[in-house]
Length: 237
Image (cartoon, rainbow, N blue to C red; front, side, top):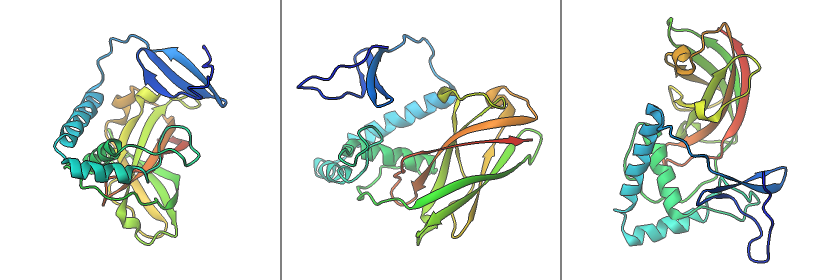
């Protein structure tokens, strides 16, 4: 893996340009060529691509005046890419698209209005149990707690999951998004996530699984999401 060498003009790199992708590992920057893949995507991935295209089309309908407002609000939103020292932010277009995707995930797809970024509450998610409501589906239950959050019902849990053989590692391309069945509530909230046809999604029929997850909170007022938090646990069916 070739290592990126900083220069006077460029101190660091991340993201992709042309056929190169820059990434960080152990505090150092490396780059690699993008693989030439013929895989056209799963039905879920193609659906998300169409949502993104609709979001970009909606951005082009936003007036220049409102785009300027979006760009100002983007300066207050943290970036999900390095550096993570509080000096980086996202563009107004990225903030708009993020809100559009957020409202879509909440089942309320529409062109969002510009709203300032607000800091998300501190939260913690813990797996508690699972049940099978029928022979095909799996219901995962979690305990979601907040710290100093006056309006937890404003937020909704969205979790990305991959089920694997016990002890096996994850494959990010096989992770799938699931929205909790209900918004968050006050106190130690129980969040329930229903996975339909769980054996068919990952082509696994096992008595025990390891779950690789990362979760975010969706703001039901703005459509924004916080930076994801990883979670891993094992359970028996």
